Image (tube, rainbow over the protein chains, first blue to last red):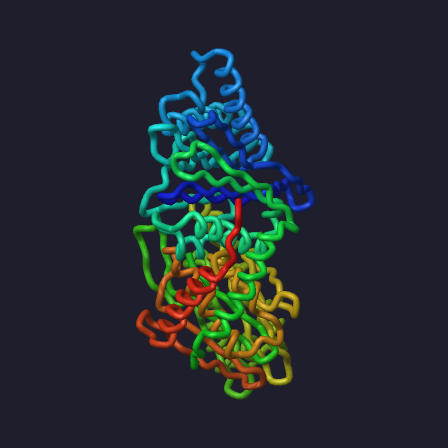
Length: 244
Length: 244
């Protein structure tokens, strides 16, 4: 499986993905699930993928190819030159639908699942921060003030902390910590999600993603993980008793 | 859906279930999912159910009928007079398999899911504390020192806190709190799990379950829920910052 989470707050976007993939529990591999496209000073566009790896790799390849072709021929529409982030999400949805139409029946005939989802996020100069989740059918939903985060893959373990912490006015510092704590809870409870992690942070109106690959021995992630374990322990010990 | 959790520590057993059932999100009802059988001073046996309600109600009815018949005719084997808790788990598994054999194909032909799981737990005089999870196929697994808890239904939201806290030497007081915190996280993140709750606490070698129905305004549960929310908030605020 996979766990990817995207947070949209007023201060920017925080995107975090793991790198574990598996076809059965005895066939585990490491693949990047975060893909970043930038037109410096103009637009940043990030994709994170979950689900059938053959499907998502093909979708990403189509988006990458579109961007490369558009650099040579500006008449080609790509996620970096299209009129809006909304249109960029549509382009990803169209790629998803084409791949699903070609492969889905064949994959399912083999007894495998063809489902795939993609979180796309970014900002263009003159536009707002946007965060979308694209489904296998090519349609999508967008994060809002009421629902300022989207998750794909193994989303349940890491949801409670996001439910409690993430609001539109959460600071960037808090959002980064919340994403890491959400991932830490998932890593501890589900073997199909694994290190290293890829993080991208997009401050509003910068059109640029600061990125970091977080390996197992990343000192700040270790500190977050250990501090959270200790703090939870203390919080738990401080709870009142219940008489049953 | 449902969330039921059973903890087995050296000091005893803690069992907690919600009461929400739904057939689609517009058809929500309240059903007890915890069923307690006792032979005072000799044996206590608790069942908690998840999955297809028609299936689980039939399984519970068969177990109840067996207990009633055995009270009249001691030659009838029931979960309260059989030779061991292991055998009692088998009896539940056999009931599950019979109901599945009769109903499963018909249920699936209607496009519904027939899956069901049952947590069974208890102790007989002269035996150990036992905690089992019975599957749709009638087979089962048992909790161990390495895995001292079992969950059925919406298990993911509430697993991280159990992974961190529950060990064989956890105290009864801590186990009760951990079960309630695990349920609280699930209630907050998943609408298909709902109040009130049923809790049963079995101290080792007492052959008796102390029980409590926990309604929404239960003062101690509210205190746990509010204290945990505040403590998590504080724990989160105390985490170190991460530079990305």
